[in-house]
Length: 281
Image (cartoon, rainbow, N blue to C red):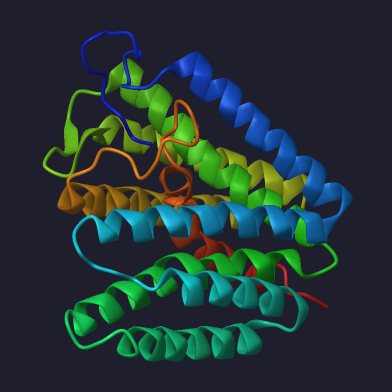
């Protein structure tokens, strides 16, 4: 995140309990790496659980504003999108999304006409924003070198967060979007960009077969843009809903959606660039 330093306090200069946040982040990282490199379907299950919880958090937050997105067809659709993306490919994933959209409409129509259009709109928003975008992570995982592709994707997005946090706390003076997210600064964005370019260049040159450092640099620049847009986009949603965090399940981080905000919009960007730079045989 591109954060600017607020006044000191118990939560630290950047508004979070840093030791707790680091501990939770390391724990999540360990789970991701172990499942990703030992049993890829287990990693897909971890993704399904994390995204499913994030979807539930968003649906619950929307319900507080009387937008009743149908949770059951959304969760079932998410499972189908991820499974079909991993086993069959993007065409099957797209069909699963379209059928889920139809199920959302039918489910909500069966409950009556009062508020129907708003509820269907909320359901389709959750489907595209969470379920469909998450499917691109499953697409990246599917090839033989899928674990390496997913590692490059997640590590580069994490680099954006870490670089932005460090530069924002140390040098942050000029606010980027004070009405949307008052802790983000232009200096933090510079830190995110530098960290993503370096991380992408190193990973493409060392981890990915037939990858080149310049491709990694382009990859990093693209992901810092998508991660920042995702971060600001979720901040706008939370501000509109009048909440600080989507949940409280991850101490020091908020909810699962608060960790997925940068990853979800970055997934299709990462998948597209990886497919272009390192085509699957």
